Image 1 (cartoon, one colour):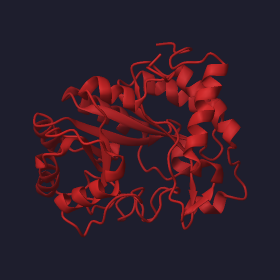
Image 2 (cartoon, rainbow, N blue to C red):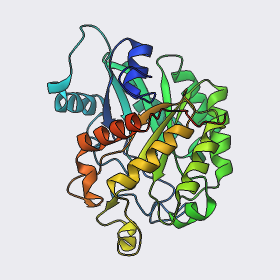
Image 3 (cartoon, rainbow, N blue to C red):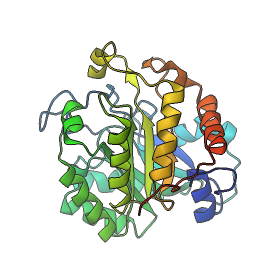
Image 4 (cartoon, rainbow, N blue to C red):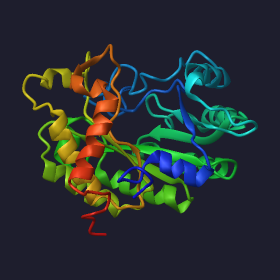
Length: 308
């Protein structure tokens, strides 16, 4: 077990790796996405909000330093400050955060890394937006402070990928992971549970594939249907998971997942003013308690049925 949890939790990893908890600050580098600017498409993925999945990020109008300070102030009430110790993760969240000229990326990433309170830089991006020049920059920065790259895989199934307009083939993910691991950068994969027409068996096949791809972390994200997204049109025809259904699938996913993979997220938050479904997901404490209870009742743990 991992302290009080039956899975390799993010908190457990942080305390073992850094000796204390780190707090994530969501930042906005002011970028767009090839799935929005016409390079691949103009509509984005069908589940993506106008904020580019960065609805909790700070305003791009502010400097990176000012965004960090603003984000710190928002969570100051829950941070137990350790003097002279970096306690924050600078998380570039909105849109595709390697989709810009390298000099600009160097400027904003370096500004974040130079902040004395930042311990780690985490960059959310697409596997098809990691050029040789970007990888060289990340390699350089990773020698200053740890760099994590978060890849929006969502599914391994090409039919689902087309349905959600992901815009790249699975081979792009394979190449990206290999290139990032070659320069010793930790990779965190986003996987969505509840995508239209995906079965539990489809999701478990994605988990099995991820196990073999050499990643270090995963975000298991419940599908949220948000206002003003193209996914909203599916709302009346698709099955929306109940809490019990989600927990059942999630527990099986954890049982299939390699124990060394860190669980960075196990449910996810949808912005309250945009969320259409499932509304039960707004009670995060209930969701987490239900997961813990189910795993204990079933005597379940991460990796219980992992074949690797």
